[in-house]
Length: 185
Image (cartoon, rainbow, N blue to C red; front, side, top):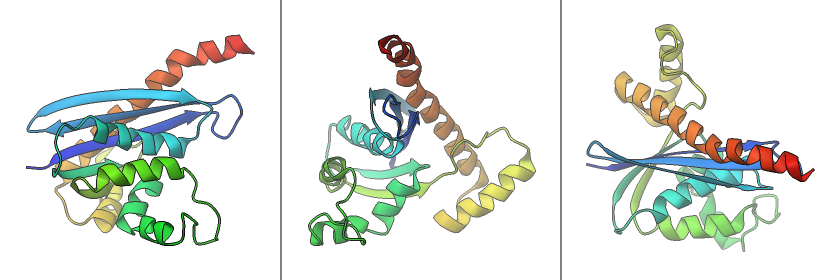
């Protein structure tokens, strides 16, 4: 049985000087769950997506686990599936445009954690209501299967439910700190 990690990041005012970001994750194994969340000020959505997975990895107390990571972040999933990080490391942390890789410090920490386990990635549709009409879900399910391989429809819907939960967790920090940020102005 694999450990499943569901992650999401959020940012209110992304790319603005007074933004607030949050991250959330759920670790699920054998019917047991652990939820984590947090955030930071003056950040980006991508940083929060990476931080969600990093914090999930840090919550593990063993190495060598079989893990399936479910995220709605193409940035995160595609990096690992397409192994972008190998070219980044080979090229001195420069991307294909010869520019410094954004969020390098987070990627380096993530890679160190990732390499301690056997992990695979699933790309899920973000912000899709798992209780949406069946026709809408079936349309998205077809896309999901195209990107992730054939899985039962019920598993797809379950992943959507966890993604919605992670989004709610990611927004906890944002909601708690929005007032503080407005008071500072």
